[in-house]
Image (cartoon, rainbow, N blue to C red):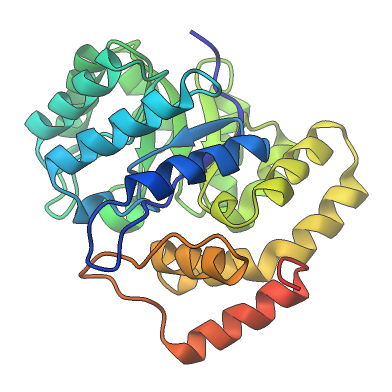
Length: 295
């Protein structure tokens, strides 16, 4: 099984104007991202609006991306759910259809206890039969997964091999990289922190900005890995305000809006989410122009 690393794209899920999955556009978008150098793909994550999809739609989305990618890059479907049974079903399905790993956010809305979350990751790992990326998203789940949690989890299961830390804490990212990096591969999922995380030795990132700026995201990773810090800093400085906008204005809708503004139409968000209002589109347009992402 290939080791995951680099810039892994959190795919936006294309929809038609009437809210149906747009599978033709999805296939084109997979090609676009791979052709522009991304190192892997995550279908059905937060950027992909998984919470607005049915279980069958999530399976279909994963199948199409896995089939169309056809081994060109690793595919890591997001299989987390509020019900362990659903997460198990999705994880087993992903593993059976050729996923390289699964990304699993823990149950949200009514936060489980710490031990219950460990039970959940164990169940996902048994079902998937492939490595698990534990997705820490405390703003949504109500529980932060820190180094102590992972140390205890690793004593119970060897299925979890990776962490996507979207805590927004650079201190926590460094703690995981420096103190658990020999046991877990650490990906930082908070866009505005990726460059310092790269410099600290993270194994990569899983982020949605690739939907509209894949070349730039990959270039940032390459510059950091090559030790070309001045060039990496300048590129990151140029992109930072766009990345900051995504995190503050509704990530999935903002990523789709940015993609449409740079000529990569992915359709509207699905209800309950809406397109960005015009005054925010105006701000985003200006930010994209300043970043050199839109002529």
